[in-house]
Amino acid sequence: MYVIMGGTGHVGSATVQALLAQAAPVTLLTRNAAHGEEWRGKGARIVEADAQDVESLRAAFRLGRRAFILNPPAAPSTDTDAVERHTVGNILAALDGSGLEKIVAQSTAGAQPGERLGDLSVLWELEEGLRNQSIPAAINRAVYYMSNWDSLLDTVRTTGKLPTLLPADLALPMVAPRDMGETAAARLLSPVTDIGVRYVQGPRLYSPNDVAQAFSQALGRPVEVQVIPRNRWEDAFLDLGFSPAAAQSYTRMTEISVDSGFEVAEDGLRGTTTIETYIQALVQRENR
Image 1 (spheres, helix red, strand yellow):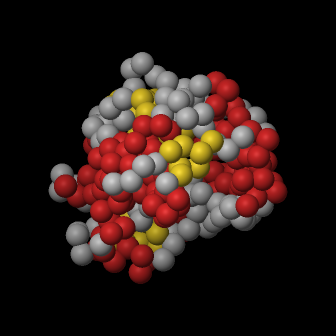
Image 2 (image 1 turned 45 degrees about the vertical axis):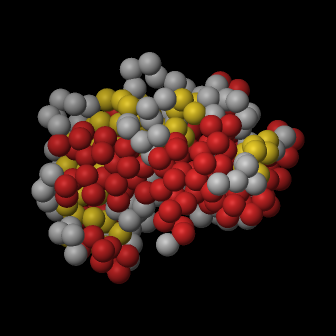
């Protein structure tokens, strides 16, 4: 049995789909069982478990032999680093006594120690915790999810502008959740010796200019990148409803990532979904 955290989210649901396609037995963890009904109809078992409750999480892990774990994102209106560091601690505590034989974890490229670096420091703590416990752990690092562009569809459709904090011509590894899920499923099914960090990216590097062109093709209208200047980054997060603490963390994470050019792995695992295919599918879903 394969236990999947975040099974109703982008990457978690893609992992469930990939496992079910191979007739693998799946238990999907969710805080609200009603959210998993679609998967029950497809053959998955639905179990309520909460990353805020160590005992419920440990009991859920005990239902399987292998587990896919990801740290659930905190609401941006909270102190995201504090909340997410707490859930990292809960996940690591729940693994103790779980009886699992292998773990596959979702992390981020550029993970590093530090304070208030958003995912970079929070997921570094998760990785370090996994390295310091006894269950063999495979870690998948992604740089940038194509799904990060989803929420901008209405803005792009209405204004023809694609707002971003990234330089318009900065090419970086973007990956579709489907490809992340298929990679996670493959490592869940692979031998227990398949452990350690692997990078997952799309078929090639993409820049915001490429994303704008993909939107333009899908929407049938001109689209141009609107770069938000660095001195407006923190305000931009605040305008989106982020708490001051979260805005500071996300700004620092963005600064480090942009200044380093993002982390590009020459030997990364490559998915097959192009940005053009992803954006076209996004537009078609929203048009239904």
